[in-house]
Image (cartoon, rainbow, N blue to C red; front, side, top):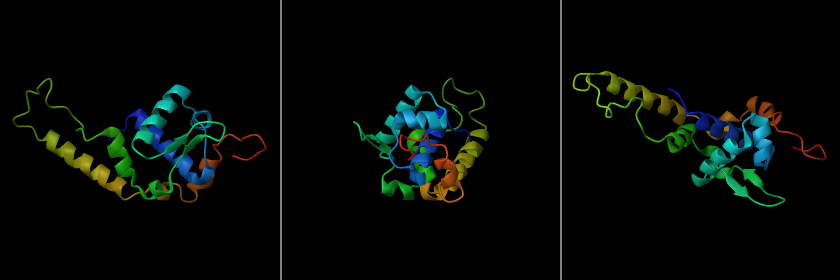
Length: 147
């Protein structure tokens, strides 16, 4: 299965924030993940709409993962961001094999298996050691040396 680029970035944003780095700005996230700021801002906005991050404006503002999101499955995040669409589109333009093809069903089964595996992984599990400290090393240092 293949995730769209914005879902990949979104998962990395959630992992970085959940690793204990505290509240980070879009600029800090952009620098840490080497993603253009405007693209990252759109990803953060989608994550906020789905409740996977919280944002605040102003001097003490930034992006944070709410505590309850730590127990959210990666499968739930992927479903929210990718939707329930099938791997292949047999409807338009209509495929000439549609009446006797087994590919669509096989790919749907594979997609469900892919998501089922991701359902067994939580955000908390993604940032458990040794990943957490590695993720924190990505965070640009703030003035005064603290992330």
